[in-house]
Length: 633
Ligand SMILES: Nc1ncnc2c1ncn2[C@@H]1O[C@H](COP(=O)(O)OP(=O)(O)OP(=O)(O)O)[C@@H](O)[C@H]1O
Image 1 (cartoon, rainbow, N blue to C red):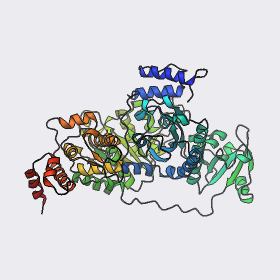
Image 2: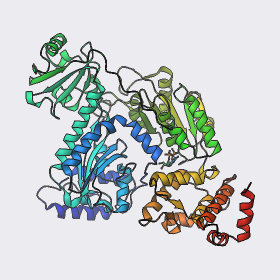
Image 3: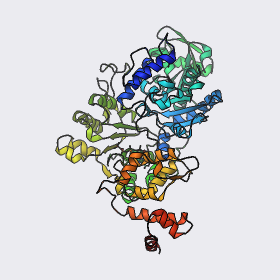
Image 4: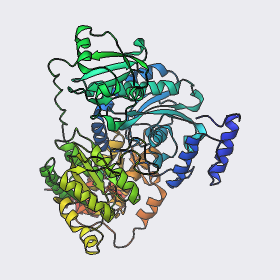
């Protein structure tokens, strides 16, 4: 983004950053309004230029779910990304595809301009959501739903100031934002044509998605010039047999003045003075030749008709994952295993699942896994945190709204998250925090299988699987009058408790799995002392805290090092591990199992030398012998 006109860009930006670092949002004109607004949002999210938010890096199972959820996007984007990479080869930049949450799904290119620690941030699984990393091209393009370039010091976080990044959103055939395409490189390599290149590539992906979605449908390709047909700028329309417009890409929507709510309702004749029969005849008698028509604004357009194949094209069989996502969560804890097995029995049936568990135990990850392991895996997984938004925003976000329903509403209305979950899974996190008025509306949707957008409009049929989660006992909320009992019985088809980490007996395996996800095949492991300290700690932040600690530790390892020791852990965790709060030690048999396995590992690492192993573990040789004897058959 360029700085204000008439000012030396570097100087204006330096001034703006100075103000930002003094805790002020700079006045209009110093940096572009997009950057100013994004800086404001970043401050609002609790970030400072020196400290980002918790930047979750998805584990391998989570990443595979995220990719599964956007499989079509990832598949169609790959060739375009390879093309982009070829165009930018040698410029020291990366081509990145992120999903609608800002999570990197695919990355290609030259990472030489990054240090080892920085590379992690551009690998699949990293999140570039604004709430995690402040102003950046991926997160800001998502927030703005528009192409964005963020150069050097325009990045909110100081340590990202060496980057120059350009991103453009990619929408699906129904106009819904699916993700973002981005080129990132060292700021020295900034190129004025990158923005155009990225936007054109994003359109190319959108057109590929459109063609794939409507391959068995009558399609029209249109452009004001005959030579524009077949280029990335062409408009695309899909028509039902009765002539209703059921799909339109951005260019076609702009040319014909269509809004998303017109789709499925308007007929082609309402927009172009051409009867469907004439179009079909033309398509059959002169395949490939452009047909002339007039847009509603009187603009001359050229159309190419693409009739559907006579017999529908067979769709490829759905890919069945080798081990499913639920199986991937099982790392040996009995109560989690039981929850997995019960969830598997109801996955895909019309039974609502209610997940209980402390914050960070992995309720959303579990819900994802249930979705990805069931028959609706190819449908969308839509997650809404009911505690994260004020009441009026959740209402609009969930139920959608008609055009112009309220001040600030988008001109063309919004389908809402419930409708977006059509054919897939709706995950409502922190359901206990949903305001009472919305509980009533949600109950109605669940009973009638219909949603009515805010501000009126026709009810729309919906079909989705519901999974909800809460960390608070809902029965208490019912007793206190904060939660509707009838809604509770609707959402509680099956209720499952996800155990807190301190009660799990599989800490060691979970750690091994997370480390392997972070650095596949890297042979990373905890030192004996750190493993013992982990086993004795209560993990109040549960898996979230553990995964974050391991991620930081991996970033701090020196090249070639694969043992995580005290010096690799975050300072506050070291304090907690060394001075655990009394009464918070883990329960159950996990500690014993972990320590015995650790002893075996230490003996193995010391080539069977018991004295050395005992010394490394900080215990006496006798204690070591005693424990290992107990283990032997
Ligand atoms: N099985 C797992 N393997 C690896 N990491 C996990 C696993 N489960 C959870 N995590 C990590 O913990 C984080 C929190 O998970 P998740 O959001 O599912 O928890 P939650 O219980 O829904 O939390 P909250 O109640 O605060 O929303 C994830 O971002 C991920 O980093």
